[in-house]
Length: 399
Image (cartoon, rainbow, N blue to C red; front, side, top):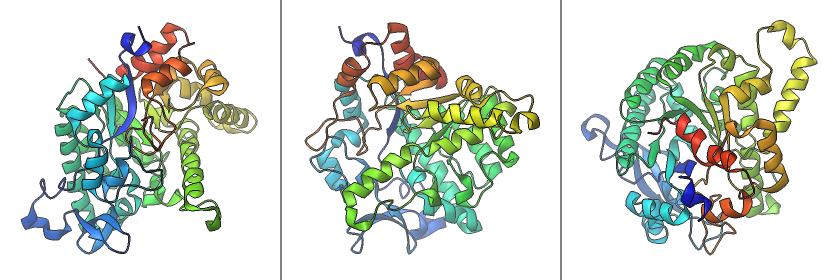
């Protein structure tokens, strides 16, 4: 009997593909007209885009439905009709459940695309009162869509909500609202300052952290949500688009080092000791170095004098923060599990994104079931249960 037959695996990071009518079917045409985000074909970009009025606010979500397709990244689907034909399980929740069975995955935590990677759209919301109201309503409509999607099987789909974080009162109200609709956590930007907001460790956010802590909602920091911090290219142009996107994605994985520094050295973990945080789609093998470097500098500067009642950053991490891993294996991952401890790690696949653990003709990926058997099978059974199920089940309040 395989490991996945014995342990109900919880995949801590997957994405739901936003349908083209997500907002037009849920928002008032009378109130907003063509400012409601809607899909059109864009000749300049040669892809479907989300349009609000005459403003392009992001590419359509077809690109995100890449898993199992026959195109090598960064060549992506440009129309939702192409994505549905190539990867129907990425769109249809019932087909997705069947694929999860094939992959050896019991449950999935569900994340957005546009609200994580649509940095320009979100930044505009922070700078315009009219946009703030509009995108606030878009946020609520998205969370309601995700509630409906998860209702296909609420025991296997775990929704986490996006927030209108540019308006603190609205964000707090939305946390309370979605908690009553089955959402198990909230998504927060890695670097809110790049959206015109106070830094993550600023006490401006304390009322929001307090509500999340009281309700028991984890705060999830997904890579790529940094907005202006995300470089378009990090290599020279003549290195080629594929080399550039592969290098850029690898750098995204470790962006949450700054987030961990804010949470620990910035005092958030100290002020809110029961609040849980997740570094999502970030990988984990870099975390021991970051924690050791934070501890080293904390001890070798006057920081410990400024905050004598703080724990060390590594101690805060082990008490309150989780890191997600997927493709890692061997000595780096084993050492990470040993250093951090199995209580602070979550397994994920990133389905159905290009980097995801989903086999197909244009990827080297294997199924989660095969990865778990070949790369994690040597671990003790209690450790496996924590990594694959128990940690996520407790964090996301799964029955």
